[in-house]
Image (cartoon, rainbow, N blue to C red; front, top):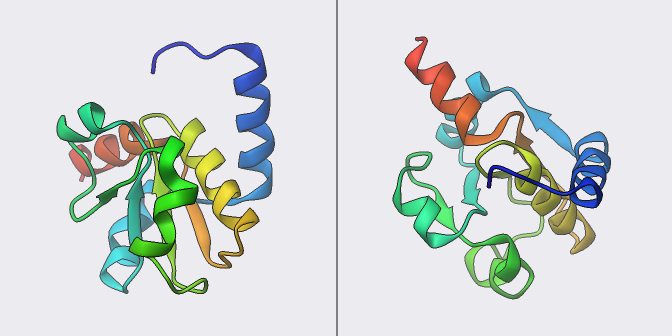
Length: 119
């Protein structure tokens, strides 16, 4: 998503202030330690590339699908989207559902890929 309206950006900023943002360089270590990566983008976006091993649950279906994918409310979860806004909103929504160990990738998949390319 290239363009977001002002209300969406306001809600995303509030979510980013509320949830833990993980540095893109720390993502692989979190996943290796057992964290679940949730790609909250749409299926067509996910199909164009994602974090290795990520499960695709679009943000619109997250509330209804997350319990089947991650039943443990204390499981470490890393949410992400393309640029970090939907990922932060998803992480905040998961916290609202009772998940206790949720993070969002700061800068989203774009930042993750840029970090990987720079290694």
